[in-house]
Length: 222
Ligand SMILES: [Zn+2]
Image (cartoon, rainbow, N blue to C red; front, side, top):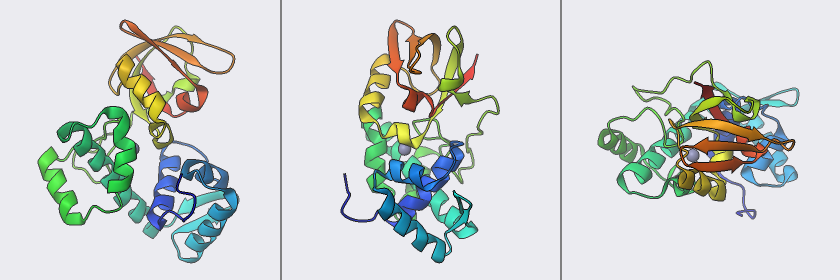
């Protein structure tokens, strides 16, 4: 991992926005986990982002200021557009697009972003089912969506979207694509064990998913 330098400001702000979009309490420990950084170095960077007016502390929780949110949404937009381009046009396998887009999001100029929007017809969501902020077709999140970790065995669910932390687990993403479990797919919940591991049946394939992923995998019951 890139543990020898601080990720850019945008990367921190993007993580704060993603955690809050996923309904996860934005505390320092969660930010450190997602950036795969040590808590002391994250704490130092967060102090700087507060002083510079991008974040505010509300007790243990962090919130974006209006400026911070605008930057975060801009990076998330570029990230998700890059994922669409990589997946739909370039043909990079689904399980690899998140990591690759993580590099593109920081170097994409506004001119290139505008060309990608035109090329792709202003898509409303990324290949993981997350809305693209600012798109004219921005996907509306269903009020009925819940994490898969809340669903009981026997239910039938449709895969709505995946948190950015789960997208970064390339091995799990490979298993998803091998099993044909992508956003929009319907699956039945066959079993759930004491550790929270869920077994899904997707047509002829079965897929077992760990709790840390099911907590970030959003579905609606159908
Ligand atoms: Zn992503």
